[in-house]
Length: 433
Image (cartoon, rainbow, N blue to C red; front, side, top):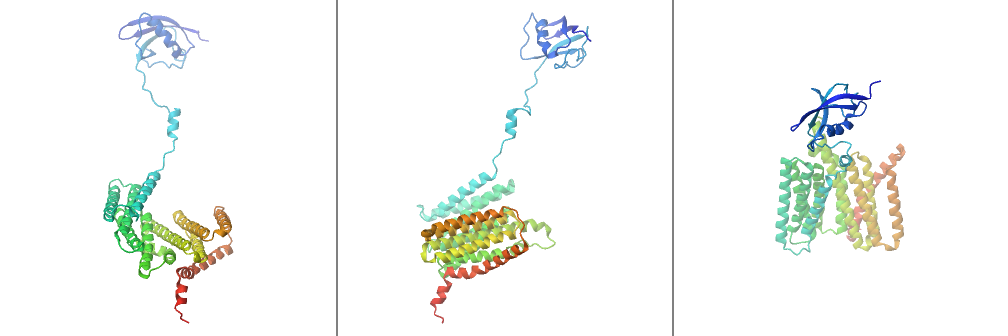
C-alpha cells in the first residue's frame, strides 16, 4: 500500500517571483483540491494575479489531471512540480445546456403563414378596389389596379430569376392575377355587373397564362385560376348574350364545369404535349391535371352557390334549386374516388362540401318552417362523411353500385340544369303543341 503522504518540491515561475517550496501533500486527494492550498503556501507573501488558472505539471510534461490524485498522476516522493498560470478557456455552450436544448427543440413557424397572410390581404385589397360603392373615381381605381397588377407580376418574375423561391413567386403571381381581375371588372363602365364579370374573368385568364409562361412556377395554382376563369367567362358571355338570370347562369356554369371535369385528363395531356416517350413531362402533366381539376371543381361550386342565391331570391324555386345543388354535390363527391392525388381529392371534396353548405343554407332561408328537417339532414350528411376515415373492405358489388349511381347522377345533372334554368317553362310557353 503506498504512503498517504507525498514529499515533493513545488517551483513557481511567474512574472514577479521565482521560488521553490518543499511540501508534504496527501497522495490520494485530487490535484484540483490541492492547487488552491498550494498557491496560498507558495505565494503567501504576494497577491496572485486574479483571473488566471493555476496548474501543476512535471517539468517538460503537460499539466496534471485535476480530477485525479497525485498517485494517479504518477507523482512520487522527490519529484519536482512546476506551478504555472494559464489563460482560462473561453466559455462554450454545452450540448446539455437547458437553454440550448430548448432553442434546438423550438417549433418554427411554417413559411406558408406569411404567404397566406399576403394572399388574404391582397385579395381584400382587390375586393375593396372593385367594390362598386367605393368613393374614389373609376379612372383612379383603374390606374391603381393596373399599377399594382403590373408591380406584382414584375416582382414575381424578378424573384423567380434572382432568388428562385417558388413560394414568393407564386404569392406575387396570385396577387397580380387578383388585381388584374379587379381592374378588368372596373374597366366596364356601362352595362350590368355581368359585363364586368366577363372582362374580369378574361383578364384573370390572360394574367394567369402570362405569368405561368414567364415564371414557369406555380403551375397548379395558375392553371386552376385559368380554368375557373375560362368557365366563368363562357358563362358570363352566355348571360350577356341571352340575358340569363342568376339561377340559369349558375346552372350553365355547373354544366360547363362538370363537362370540363370529365375531360381534364385529355386536356392535361394535350396542353403539356405528353407522349409515351416523353417521361420528363409527367410531373408537369400531373400539375396541369391537378390545376384543371381544382379549377373545374371551383367552377362547379361557384355555379351551385349562384343557384342557391337565386333560390333565395325566388321562393318558388326552392325545391328544384335544392335538388339540383344536391345532385351536383353528389357528382363532385363521387368523383373523389377516381383520383389518387391528395390535392385533386381535396379540391373535389371541398367543392362538394361547399355545394352542400350552400344548399342547406338556401333551403333553410327559403323554408324556415322545415328547419328541423334540414338540421337533421345536415347532421346526418356530416356523420356519413366520417365513414371515409374508416378503412374497410368494399365488395365489388358495392363498387359497381357506386359507379352506376355516379352515372345516374351525371346523367341527371343536364335535365335538372334545364329545369333550374327555365328551359322547360320557356318551351311550354312556345305552345308547340
